[in-house]
Length: 251
Length: 111
Image (cartoon, rainbow over all chains, first blue to last red; front, top):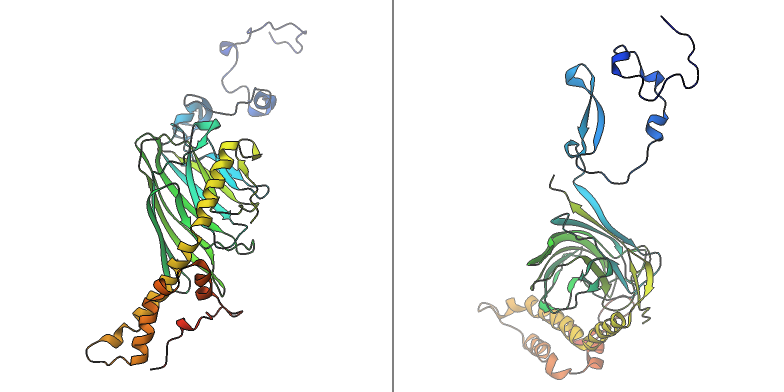
């Protein structure tokens, strides 16, 4: 017997189940769009969260796949600071955690408000309410190659900071240090090291030189580092300076 | 030079330094300023070395170094002992509007 109308309340909850519906009887045009948009949104995914898929290797039958089996980006942003106005220092806190072992850091337009200053970096400890590590445990080796062919370097052990570049050019038009570093196990107690490359504009007596910079550094003592701290030897960082930290996924 | 004593971080944005951070900043800047003469002397030494290297070939056994070059090279070597304060370093590092060094000690005598 067929019915053409069903009175309100005529179908009780869960009264229609799979045994009562012919296979493939409900096509996509009958799905309410709120089947997706009506659900509660989440902002992070667990490895076992599930996505509906049409299995191409099994006649397009519906199946699910878990988040842990989805391909994903290898770089996951863990912190970013962009200066909205000039400031003495730029800090990125809580960007190194136990979630990732190694990190990729991009530094953009780290320009000083003064000429002839050194660009420096320190680690932070303590997570979200961090403090700057000023121990004399920093050693660094930075080598420079100028566009006029000259070379220079900044090296040191038992320093209170890493020295990344020198001879800053204060003009905002020339931009300051731009570069990328990889930090190795900064959140491990026994190791904090980085290496990477960049470029900057060196203020010289007669003009400006574009300089290729190759940097490496090591922190000599045990410490769990959770963030980064950038500053010039004197003067401020200009608005627009930007540091982005990404955790490198090994999945 | 203006120091703003401010921090821009990823959690609260722009903020004033804590007393401890300000003290560290003042210590850093003072150390930098105190080392000004040392940095200038380092730069002078590098400039001197470049000129000495450029004329080292004149000391080869098959070449005779002119006396005026010998005198000039000795004056370069004597820079640290004859120029001993920051004012003297500033004179050695002074340049004209074209960026050329103005102190006569940097000019190599004609052979």
